[in-house]
Image 1 (cartoon, helix red, strand yellow):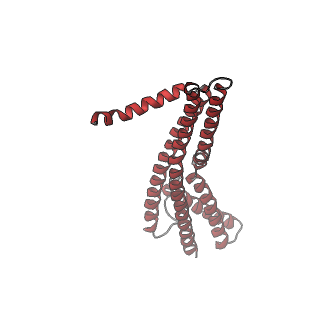
Image 2: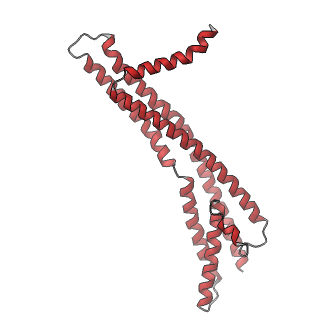
Image 3: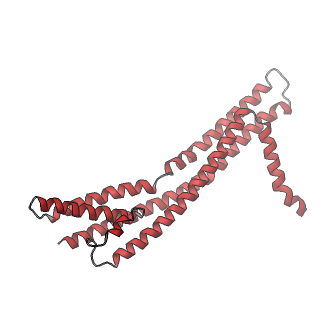
Length: 233
């Protein structure tokens, strides 16, 4: 009995391969395509999860560093070159826009702190939009796999059933005639669900993490704008 339990996964895999070999060309293409989609979906989910985790750590470290500074406007340029960190990207755009507006005001012979702050706030909003797109990158493709995989599997199911009925038209309905088409139909259905079910859970998890990080980004942007306003007075 333990030996049979040990070999059961191997036997199941062998059966799946046999079923795949009995399928017609269209069902084989559909199942193979779904297998590729599954690999792509898992790659995106793991890659995006670890990317968001890494960016969150970098953001919190950068925010903690800024919190310890007495002033933001006079910090060294090295902090503005860390564009790979979302919070640093917002900081760099805000400070650069602030000083650029200050130079223009000085050249025009007037001092307008409100204009400098407005330029900085506009730069922050553009940076938020840019980083939000960065957070959400690859999510649309993953959502397409989530919604499209069951329909592709259904296409294989319908095609397999159609092939099964076509094979017995004008002949006796023997099991040997029905088996290839029905096997292909069931395998395509299973493949579509195997792709879609993990993907939908992974997508929802990543979507929740992305929304949380966008909210944190907006809160940080608000805090950054407040500090710039206080220092400009």
